[in-house]
Length: 207
Image 1 (cartoon, helix red, strand yellow):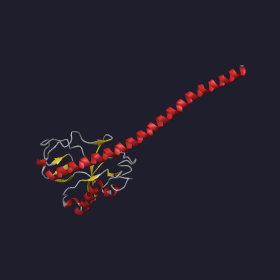
Image 2 (cartoon, one colour):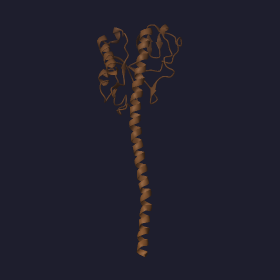
Image 3 (cartoon, rainbow, N blue to C red):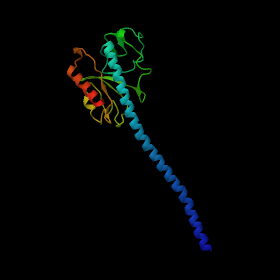
Image 4 (cartoon, rainbow, N blue to C red):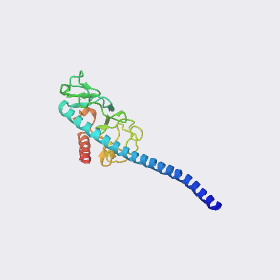
């Protein structure tokens, strides 16, 4: 009887340890699964948000070009923080770092708030192939690459090629950059065929 009671005692002791142990294991597994799900969901959402923002900005700059004629931009990298400026809300031909041939036709604001990703504004980048809308320096893309660190967007950057590369500015068939299709003066050094090619490439990928 004593031996039987001892077995029962050991069995109860084992179950007493086993149940909390299994509970902890299950909870840890659930936490790990939640983190994995959150990571992939965040990655998907981030890629979609950037692609949506880029498409929206491309449409806005197309409207501005049609009405106001964009001459160019002041810098190699130009922060897009001027689309909230109201009609008649500025003096001269320059809005932010963007120069217009017909500033009187500006029809802002084009957005309620300037678009950002991870708290960083988008930018217009000048390259040998023309101007492009891209995420700002410091933004981490869904592929894990960081703009300005892993992806260098200087004047020599081949952004049209990056827009075809999932290790750069392509995510699940959507581009994370777009050309600013403007009639650029010859003195800025762009070849019209290069800009037209970039525009056709973007339209093809995003159609």
